Length: 301
Image 1 (cartoon, rainbow, N blue to C red):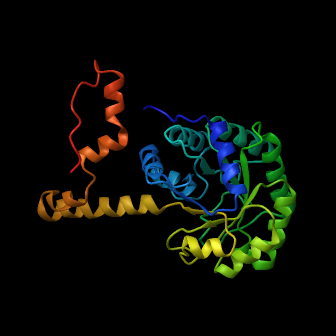
Image 2 (image 1 turned 90 degrees about the horizontal axis):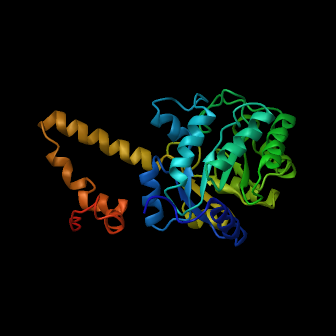
């Protein structure tokens, strides 16, 4: 009922423990707090909070227009609704090294278990678009050092994302990965890898957990969890999958209303009221305070 039963420190320690096991962890992207509850109920390992999704939710493109305040607020709203660890996209850290340090502490306050800082030039672009620019190695290293130095909970996962593969090639990505790990990154997010061999090359180059981004319509093929585990990947995210699914269905429903004058043809594919009440755990609120919640929850259909 209400918020997570687990404190942020407990979630961070649990994430560290799971990553140390070498297992592949699957983190679908939540587009709101309710979808985070669904991800937990379905038995996934964690929740990803995508910068692209947050921007889209505000009606904005993913080009660095969102603010630290907006990202921290959404991170807090999602993180407090689930017992799972959350990892958030912190873009470039919202400024210079001191800004990166503040970003880390604000997101730590928001209750996330981890975050990633990327090496793009600000304003950044979606990682699977062409025309990206990356900063020099010195700037990228300073961002990660600032992030690692700023955290107060040593279990907060500081992940470095590098977009250099799409700009300077695979060898540059390997070199940058090593530099970022040496700078203090606890995990590595190599963006826009083209095939499993490239993920495997990154895996051989560093001794920290590696993340694979399985976003639709991007540079990478949509590999299965087994395929990614087979080349040593430790975390896989599906950042925009649920938002795309929800918006696709929303568009089809609106088309049906325009076409037929009613939403009736779309009702069969909708989440029922009973299922929504179950996900929101109305029964627990009812048991806690019957003076407020004093109705019967309808059975599932």
